Image 1 (cartoon, rainbow, N blue to C red):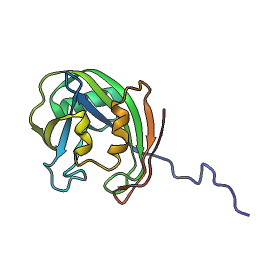
Image 2: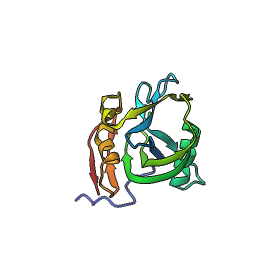
Image 3: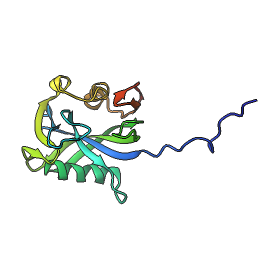
Image 4: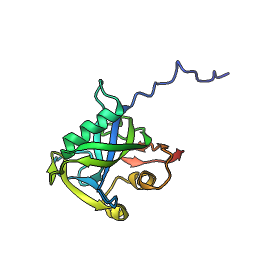
Length: 171
């Protein structure tokens, strides 16, 4: 007779915790995206992404998002909203698990430069995001980031060998 799996036999889920932010233009019709074209060997090379990165041990997710936006776009977040969370099991370059907190930045101070260490920065019309070279999975969750539903979404998007395997979410 086989014993049922218990919590002692499971590997704990210990993802890399990160933020991902989408800065809206003052008119709310465009968002700031980075075209990851600056570093050979970048797992995201050639793709467009929002801004963000790994959380530091001494940061809460809001502080981490503000720091990442400051570092990557040279601007200060004045207003930001948590739009959702995403679990990306197996997403990392070496199969690492990631857990992301997804934000929209509604107001900011400063002027973003033309580029940063990861690539060129572009203001992209929201209705043209789907035309960009994005991660396959981004096409599934980006509509939830910008929809009118005030409820945050919480998704799971497993990856295997660099490809999305499935997608599910709840609100």
